[in-house]
Amino acid sequence: MVESNLSQMMASKQFATFTLNSLFLGVDVLKVQEVIRYQTMTRVPTAPAMVEGLINLRGQIITAIDLRLRLDLPPRPEDQLPMNVVIRTDDGALSLLVDEIGDVVEIADGSFERIPETVTGVVRDLVTGVYKLEGKLLLILDTEKAANLPMASALTLVSAKN
Image: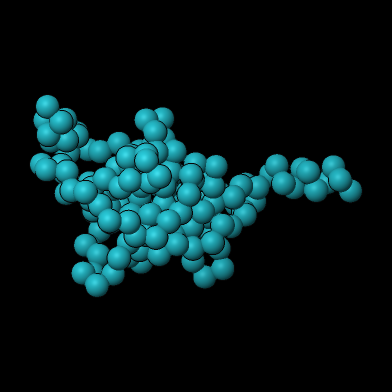
């Protein structure tokens, strides 16, 4: 019985979920450092539009990327404050600004599917695949790709630092 439960746990993954526009997205829970509500940000002059600013998280300065802009989605309504999903990347912590935080879901590995043809544009480039849940699709975000800004945006950020 213990071995059966152990193999079931190993054959599933946990994802921290959130919504962005009409998309239901998830990231591997092991890549999430923490989830926090909106923090006041310091703007970075000449940074790309998708870089909302910098937040101070207990002395750690973290870049906040507006995931709506990163995924080429419409801007967030003015009266809606984003939430921060702070993730760990190879280059350190990074905050992804999302519309709403969901739950942590556990999903069997075997139900992972390729990205449907209906998912297009930048979203398609930054999603690794999907899980079909009751009534909705969970799109799995590649956090490393999401953290890497497009070349034109990265050049603007580098020139701003010099």
